[in-house]
Image (cartoon, rainbow, N blue to C red; front, side):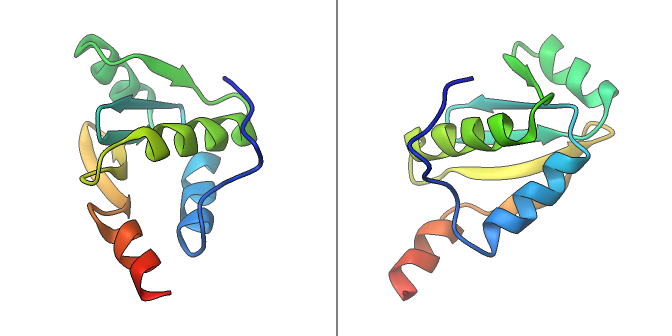
Length: 104
C-alpha cells in the first residue's frame, strides 16, 4: 500500500472507519463500491467474486488505502462493512460525504 500525503477522512467518518478496521480482515474496492470485510468467509466470498483483496495487517496503511480509493471514486462512492456475506454497516453512504462538505 502506498503512503499518502497525510490527508484522511474527516470526522465523524474517520472514527467510524477506524473502529471498523479494528475488526477487519481485508478491504476491497470496485469502482465506487468500497468494502471492509469483517470475517474470513466474506473475505473469501469477495475474492471468489473477483475482487482484489487487501489484507488488513497495518491499520494505518489500510486507512490510507481506503482514503486513496475513496478520493479516486465517483460521486456515488460509499464505504460499507460486510459480515457473513451481507452489508453489515454503512460507514459512508452514497453522497453523504459530499453533502457534509457542502454544509460546512
